[in-house]
Length: 288
Image (cartoon, rainbow, N blue to C red; front, side, top):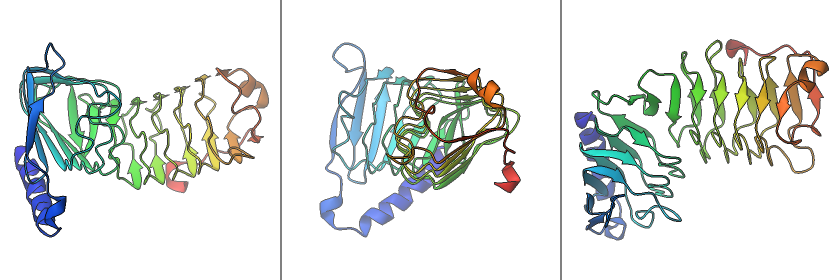
């Protein structure tokens, strides 16, 4: 993991050398711990945009955004000893491209890496007991939860074996236009998992039983959604402001009957007024 991080940092450094000096990071340092006066965790930012965080315990939550959101942070190297990352800790770090997690980080609070549109790689130490990284995306160690997808992805294929798309997994991924879900394993879409993914136009959700709050809210590009008979519960505001303002989502394609649709537990009426097609043939991954 360290070698991969260093190679990425080398590329970033070369890129930085090609831009005017006004874009270089101003070296800085401070504390960011969640305990007491915060001195249990310290940070340093060098001129290449590398933010190094070390110490013991948890990184504090962001308050109205990250304490680094106004700094040109390109990469974050969290050192062994740090155990967790607070809510919104890196929220709004627009230039952040890569994050390295050590073996000791076992707790990531809500939206810890939210609204980082350039984030392409989350690297995880192989000895970490809670998380792993596959192709830049962050998963639970057993691979059943997709914790955080690459924010700059245009297309993403969720691998077989994933049962849950975690809360905020693709929150604000503005470049995402296509997402493919596995058949047979996926059951749950977490809260705000795809909120503000305005580039999504079609969704196929095979086998899903639960859709969380605001999961696809403000996905203004959505025009077609395929929903399976397995769906049991759609949480409050799951599709708030999805689709166009006048028509919402143009086509809700449901595999079951209208009677089965009416048996689904909807926490609000957002989908109620949109056009629905019943008893539809669902797309398969290969035919989508």
